[in-house]
Image 1 (cartoon, one colour):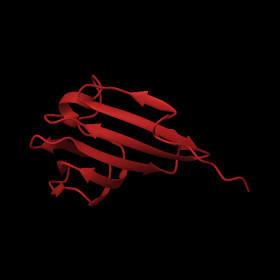
Image 2 (tube, rainbow, N blue to C red):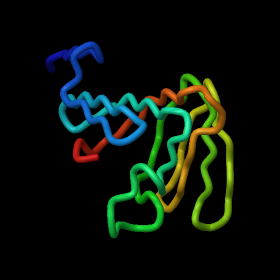
Image 3 (cartoon, rainbow, N blue to C red):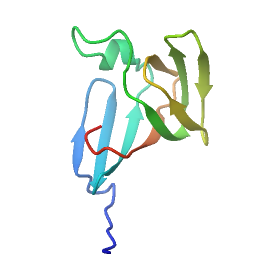
Image 4 (cartoon, rainbow, N blue to C red):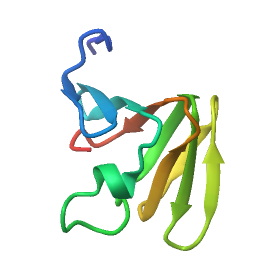
Length: 114
Protein backbone atom coordinates (compact mmCIF):
# COMPACT_ATOMS: atom_id res chain seq x y z
CA UNK A 1 0.00 0.00 0.00
CA UNK A 2 1.30 3.43 -0.93
CA UNK A 3 0.81 6.53 1.22
CA UNK A 4 -0.26 9.73 -0.52
CA UNK A 5 -0.02 13.40 0.32
CA UNK A 6 -1.55 16.46 -1.29
CA UNK A 7 -2.03 20.00 -0.02
CA UNK A 8 -4.64 22.70 -0.56
CA UNK A 9 -1.80 25.07 -1.47
CA UNK A 10 -1.87 23.15 -4.78
CA UNK A 11 -5.37 21.66 -5.22
CA UNK A 12 -6.17 19.38 -8.16
CA UNK A 13 -8.94 21.72 -9.30
CA UNK A 14 -10.16 25.23 -8.46
CA UNK A 15 -13.60 26.54 -9.40
CA UNK A 16 -14.88 30.05 -8.78
CA UNK A 17 -18.64 30.15 -9.28
CA UNK A 18 -20.37 33.38 -8.20
CA UNK A 19 -19.64 34.33 -4.60
CA UNK A 20 -17.70 31.18 -3.77
CA UNK A 21 -14.46 29.29 -4.27
CA UNK A 22 -14.15 25.52 -4.48
CA UNK A 23 -10.80 23.75 -4.19
CA UNK A 24 -10.79 20.00 -4.82
CA UNK A 25 -8.26 17.28 -4.00
CA UNK A 26 -8.79 13.67 -5.07
CA UNK A 27 -6.82 10.62 -4.00
CA UNK A 28 -8.13 7.35 -5.38
CA UNK A 29 -11.92 7.32 -5.03
CA UNK A 30 -11.98 9.88 -2.22
CA UNK A 31 -12.37 13.61 -2.62
CA UNK A 32 -12.15 16.48 -0.19
CA UNK A 33 -13.31 19.96 -1.12
CA UNK A 34 -12.60 23.24 0.58
CA UNK A 35 -15.46 25.62 -0.10
CA UNK A 36 -15.52 29.30 0.75
CA UNK A 37 -18.95 30.92 0.57
CA UNK A 38 -18.91 34.73 0.57
CA UNK A 39 -21.43 36.79 2.54
CA UNK A 40 -24.67 36.99 0.56
CA UNK A 41 -24.15 33.61 -1.17
CA UNK A 42 -27.25 31.44 -1.60
CA UNK A 43 -27.41 28.12 -3.45
CA UNK A 44 -30.71 28.88 -5.23
CA UNK A 45 -29.38 32.25 -6.40
CA UNK A 46 -25.69 31.60 -7.06
CA UNK A 47 -25.19 27.86 -7.67
CA UNK A 48 -28.44 26.50 -9.11
CA UNK A 49 -27.82 25.50 -12.73
CA UNK A 50 -30.13 27.20 -15.26
CA UNK A 51 -33.18 24.99 -15.65
CA UNK A 52 -31.82 22.71 -12.94
CA UNK A 53 -33.57 21.32 -9.88
CA UNK A 54 -35.14 23.73 -7.41
CA UNK A 55 -32.89 22.45 -4.62
CA UNK A 56 -29.34 21.12 -4.28
CA UNK A 57 -29.26 17.38 -4.96
CA UNK A 58 -25.82 16.67 -3.47
CA UNK A 59 -25.39 14.90 -0.12
CA UNK A 60 -22.98 17.01 1.94
CA UNK A 61 -20.85 15.61 4.75
CA UNK A 62 -18.10 17.70 6.27
CA UNK A 63 -17.04 20.24 8.85
CA UNK A 64 -17.46 24.01 8.98
CA UNK A 65 -14.58 26.19 10.14
CA UNK A 66 -15.94 29.74 10.00
CA UNK A 67 -19.11 31.76 9.46
CA UNK A 68 -22.80 30.88 9.74
CA UNK A 69 -24.84 28.86 7.23
CA UNK A 70 -28.62 28.33 7.26
CA UNK A 71 -29.99 25.29 5.44
CA UNK A 72 -33.64 24.57 4.62
CA UNK A 73 -34.56 21.07 3.43
CA UNK A 74 -37.38 20.40 0.95
CA UNK A 75 -39.31 18.63 3.75
CA UNK A 76 -39.36 21.86 5.81
CA UNK A 77 -36.54 21.11 8.26
CA UNK A 78 -34.24 24.08 8.92
CA UNK A 79 -30.92 24.22 10.74
CA UNK A 80 -28.08 26.69 11.32
CA UNK A 81 -24.42 25.62 11.14
CA UNK A 82 -21.41 27.40 12.61
CA UNK A 83 -17.74 26.92 13.39
CA UNK A 84 -16.92 23.37 14.50
CA UNK A 85 -20.24 21.91 13.35
CA UNK A 86 -20.19 18.71 11.30
CA UNK A 87 -22.66 18.71 8.40
CA UNK A 88 -24.67 15.74 7.20
CA UNK A 89 -27.19 17.24 4.80
CA UNK A 90 -29.17 14.93 2.50
CA UNK A 91 -30.08 15.95 -1.06
CA UNK A 92 -32.99 18.35 -1.51
CA UNK A 93 -32.04 21.59 0.23
CA UNK A 94 -31.22 25.27 -0.16
CA UNK A 95 -28.56 26.98 1.90
CA UNK A 96 -27.27 30.51 2.44
CA UNK A 97 -24.65 32.46 4.35
CA UNK A 98 -25.98 34.33 7.37
CA UNK A 99 -24.20 37.53 8.38
CA UNK A 100 -21.09 39.17 6.98
CA UNK A 101 -18.46 36.48 7.65
CA UNK A 102 -17.49 34.01 4.94
CA UNK A 103 -18.26 30.33 5.54
CA UNK A 104 -15.30 27.99 5.14
CA UNK A 105 -16.28 24.32 4.92
CA UNK A 106 -14.45 21.06 4.17
CA UNK A 107 -16.60 18.39 2.52
CA UNK A 108 -15.76 14.70 2.10
CA UNK A 109 -16.91 12.43 -0.73
CA UNK A 110 -16.31 8.73 -1.31
CA UNK A 111 -17.11 9.01 -5.03
CA UNK A 112 -14.53 11.23 -6.77
CA UNK A 113 -17.15 12.42 -9.30
CA UNK A 114 -18.78 14.82 -6.76
